[in-house]
Amino acid sequence: MTEKEKMLAGEMYDPLDPQLAEERYQARLLFQEFNKIDENNKTKRNEVLGKLIPHTGSDLWVEPPFYCDYGSNIIMGNQVFMNFNCCILDVMQVKMGDRVMLGPQVQIYTATHPLKAKARSSGREFAKPITIGNDVWIGGNATICPGVNIGNGVVIGAGSVVTKNIPDNCFAAGNPARVIREIEND
Image (cartoon, rainbow, N blue to C red; front, side):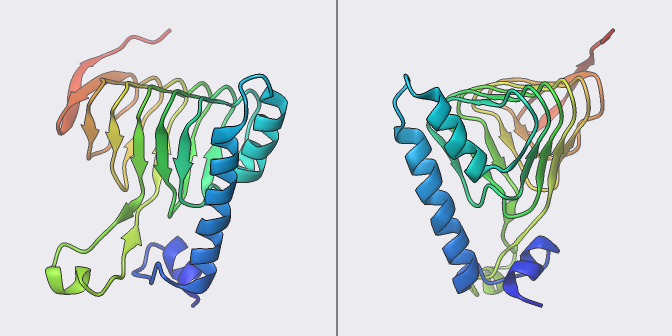
């Protein structure tokens, strides 16, 4: 297996692999270009964003600055909104449904590292995918950790650290985030 194949399979891989380094470099060039485009040129901004994140539905709105590792591992539904300064470490797939809203400075991390120091010092890492359902609102400064699934109709409170799956139709908050109450979504 190539290092990229290992990465996408959730196995330990070498992030310094030349192919992966080049793909991250190309993503950085695109998000740097996106982040610099004048507010009056939204058409150009959307063109660059489409190159960076090619798997999107309609009506994607991203406020710059925005950061990601690859962009190609992000899949978004329709009417996704990301506020200022969001970061997605898309070492593995990050899938968002329709009508997802991310507050400012939301961080989504698929990348992770071994717990044992010896394995961690090898420089190798792995990742776990993240799925976010439809009609989800993630409050500002929230962090979504590797391997988390967030259900449909969920609200994540600002500043929360989501370390475990969150079921449909509830409000979750805290560090670590826990379900506070159910939401009756019609």
